[in-house]
Length: 518
Image 1 (tube, one colour):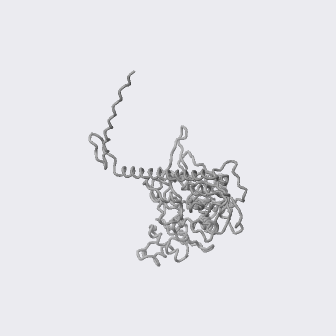
Image 2 (cartoon, rainbow, N blue to C red; image 1 turned 120 degrees about the horizontal axis):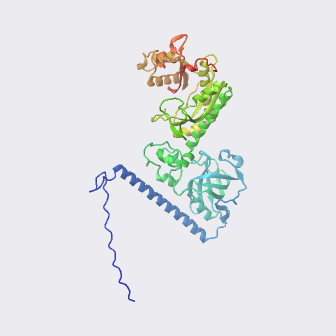
Image 3 (tube, helix red, strand yellow; image 1 turned 180 degrees about the horizontal axis):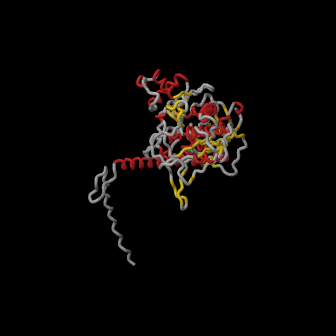
């Protein structure tokens, strides 16, 4: 049977027509992508190319390590690798925060994240190991001349581990020749003899730790992110000024790295301490804690700033406040109650004073004789929180200030709390304030610049950033605020201030009248 004739070579397809750019229309078609869209596409392509390049480099390093391992017998092969249910280290477990001279020369075990890893020649590698927050230490792994307990293969394997992998190590605690400045635990280092990977880190980090530890730089641009070099090279210093931050979108897309950032853990520690101090102070004064619902059948504070949602065949709302439920507790027979829980406000405003979700610390109490009972209780709990934070969270606050700089928050000494009437505050402005406030009136409310100027004066005069203004003029409060029976030109209303900014305002008449239990 004769062979069939060979097919003719297919002609190459015609080149595709390049798309229009900068919004120019393609003949017979729609307008092309905008410059912004092209810029985003270009940035995305560069990002993907960089990821691919780094993945290839990592694969090459791993292949080289495997090839080296295949050339000679690895006498330390049981001392490193992936952790399994059979992996066991009998040494004492010690947290980095508890490391001291008593551990020198001893072998310990540690579970930590790889903050940095680098080779130093063919026989030595350095790794930075981090526990919670910024507690990190330098680890050294050096090949033994006998090939055990550490071999060259083990050194290469550890030096090529991905950043942010979670590992278990056995190591001897030693004194370095000089303090290691790149880590918090600088006066000790670990000489590693065993290393097992519990959870490997990704080949490419979406956001590096140093970037996650910087302030958010952009709340709108999805493409703003951390630098490639930082992710590739590891962390030399979490507080470097030249490390750029990442956008909010990048933080939200990398929640684990966001949570691992020392500054975020410090902030979380401070938040938890605030809750503990709040409860501690009030329970010592006979307040009883209760739980208020978050899903309710009616808007708790009225208005339109409420999140509604279907509840089967009915309408439900996320609670704006536990207000009703606090009052139910008092009407139900309790004298003093407190509650802690999430609060939701549908406030579409981009200011520091508006949040759609936050944790509310609430209290409600029966007033027996005078509205100053409320003032003194609120002042007491806030000062207890502020003083407690300075005492219990000094380390966390110092860490936060490396990222978000601020001055020390000055507090009055116990028994020296600053409580001024509105008229006294205005008099201080007239006497010692800026020239433009020399004629301020006792019958008109303060403007925001006036409040800040008064805050600066009080800080200078009384050495405190926290103070109370009482007895606001009638014209500066709603018509239903209770007038002072001794001076009807002022009301039983007070504000709390921090650094010249109002943080609390109380003027509701129900707070100042004795309530029945009906």
